[in-house]
Image 1 (tube, rainbow, N blue to C red):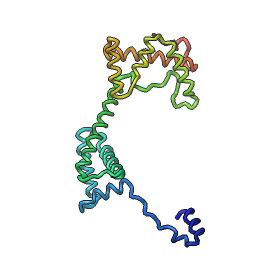
Image 2: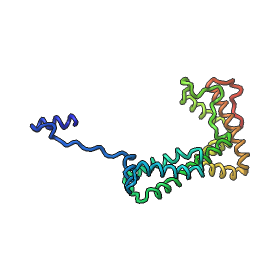
Image 3: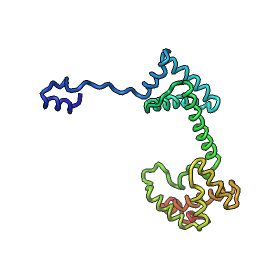
Image 4: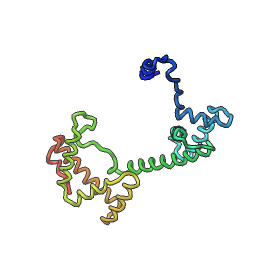
Length: 221
């Protein structure tokens, strides 16, 4: 019972214990899921384990390394949908509908990961002479140096590198495809050109931060 109820009851001359009946805690998302799984008379735990095994088999056909985690993701999403008030009549049918969506999302992530792994321009890389985990690295100074180095590039190189890193995932791939077409380049040639500009910018930024020799820090057009 809260302090506010006790004080209010005392002011009205009523016993604190009678001021308000204790309210039951609302069920958690997972508790609602278990209630729904056990709605047809079978023990909820047995239905849960059976459905989880079937989901794992489904995911192993598509993304075997992530099968168990993805099955758990399906249950988490189902539980939150139930908490939001979504009506689920056929639990298994609904679960596999969610599973198909989760699978598509995971496959898209894996595709992006493979594409990034094959493209050096999409790989994270520390600036020369700079440890990104170093607390002494001033992010504001890095950004200021980057802006300065971008201004030192010729207009064509500056426009190319900014356009190259526009968008993420599928949007980014489409943007790079359009850029390559506009410049009359193959994607591989565009990637190589962007990589050279990026490396020059990294050396320039590191030079302005005093981490490499200034002679090496000039961006190449």
